[in-house]
Length: 347
Image 1 (cartoon, rainbow, N blue to C red):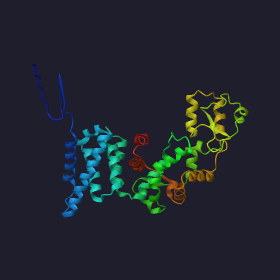
Image 2 (cartoon, one colour; image 1 turned 180 degrees about the horizontal axis):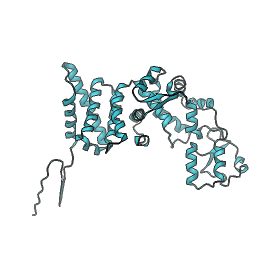
Image 3 (cartoon, rainbow, N blue to C red; image 1 turned 135 degrees about the horizontal axis):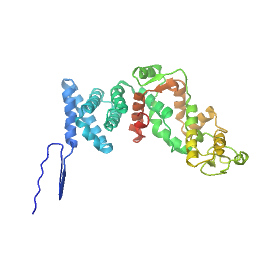
Image 4 (tube, rainbow, N blue to C red; image 1 turned 45 degrees about the vertical axis):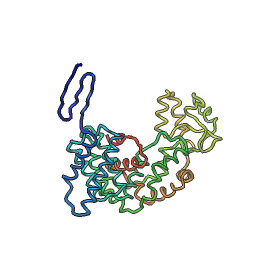
């Protein structure tokens, strides 16, 4: 019987024929111990019950982070002994130990998991580090303002093809924040002070934003003979023309936005003669802002509150910084579970 023997030091990888033993990096329990050691070594000494509460909270948030890390980015365990990552971890432990807020804890965990995915010091890593410091300084209404501003002003869901899907998108990403939003100017002044955004002079109505981002959902349609009148060579091509979502007796261009339409025409090699004609039909008979508002409220009645707060607060003229985007993104992600990668907006 052949015997083979290998010995490896800490964090080594041992491989031999007939038998494979892998000891690479730290395992879950070791990372947990490292994480808690970071907290014990750095958090200032409290006395009595306060110390016990802080310790209990630190353990809780550490467990929640490690469990989420194991699900979403197990490679992140390798970061356990990185000084900068330990500092980010301690920031989360410290802030949660102080406040114990469940929503803040979930938000910090999401930010820290995103931080674990950064392999090198880049702008995204720097922004996430800063976000971990800023988020605990914000109240629920301020966090809600960042989430809603981010959703409407910085994102577009290309998968939304009808009013039912738009309603579901509102349910997932807007409804959780309806009761938390505030018209209070101090809310936005503090967000500005914290480096999350700025209050500009110009305003942008929510109706206008939705009418641009999801223009295809707010069209009144046109008669079929418009295609022939305008001499569009592709005719009633179903890739570009469908029954109007708001009037089945008419038809409309099949696209969410002008940008999506342009991409679709490029991918289908639409002729240069047809392109401006199709774009003209896309811009024909659009709903006005009042009609867009009424349609959204018809789809989801709670949207009336959103329109009201948007028009009577600084939501209409608030612009996010990279930190505001990161926190708004994390606040939506913690509720919906899934969202596009933050690197789309910060890179």
